[in-house]
Image (tube, rainbow, N blue to C red; front, top):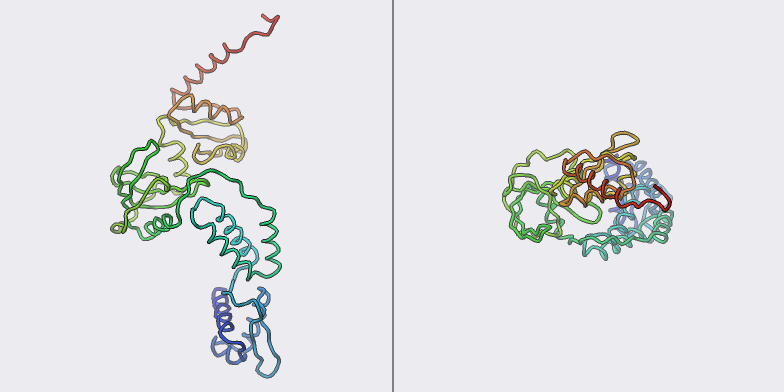
Amino acid sequence: MLETSARLLRLLSLLQQHREWPGPRLADKLGVTVRTVRRDVERLRELGYPVHATTGNTGRYRLGAGAVMPPLLLDDDEAVAVAVGLRTAASGTVAGIEDTSLRALAKLEQILPSRLRHRVATLGAVTVAQHQPGAEVSADLLTTIAAACRDHQRLRIDYRSHDGTDSMRTVEPHRLVHAGRRWYLVAYDLDRADWRTFRVDRLRPWTPAGPRFTPRVPPSDDIGAYASWSVGVGRYRYQARFTVYAPAAQVAQRVTPEAGVVEAVDDDKCTLRAGSNSLDGLALHVALLGFDFTVHEPAELVEQFRTLHARMGHAIQPLPGGD
């Protein structure tokens, strides 16, 4: 399949170089038979490319109008997925790529077969992006960090923590994590001798990148879950564990990755881990989810719930005429 796709790509490239190609000459260029060229031409037509042919002993092929763009060797679902991704990127949290995404989408739509152009246009016409406040990051910053992750190069970064403290850190970058409204970098912090999760919008890397390093064993097989725990639980003074008596999927709809980590126990209940510097904040957070729950830890939070239970019981005044 890979060999066939590469040959189709080469065939389209050749067809774009000349007005017409005799069949035998194309076969010679591709190292195949004339019969294979005919089959490949049919395959291109099935993909929506206007390849015209003349009959005769040799046959001649040329691309029709509208086929001057680079070839798109994607099936229908793949093409629609790319279009949806570009449209989403145009309203996302990566600064500076909105116009680029729209230009790329316009070019993509030019070379889509008409049946797919209609699907993409319909989707765009009825879709409205919901504005979700979040810190924007530049595409250049993301690509710089991604390259350091790929090449296993240390980064020196200026970082501002959530309490406004500035510091210079030397890290071994591992993965970028996109949490919907924010981007995070999971990295080994050489100054703290431990794994840390950094908000990308709060860091500025020094250039050029530092020396190469040997990758360490990551802190978890699921880096996305680790990042959620790190920003939603691990960095707080109080780290709580609850059993929530509702399906994990329902609870996850009300708990953002920054607010906690939801893990299914069975079909009817799940574990919620959340963190806060305030016991009252933790209590209020889980109580307002709208599900029954049991608090397990920390001990200070269990005692705080007892205090709140007594306080709220005293707050309810007897009904008129009651005991």
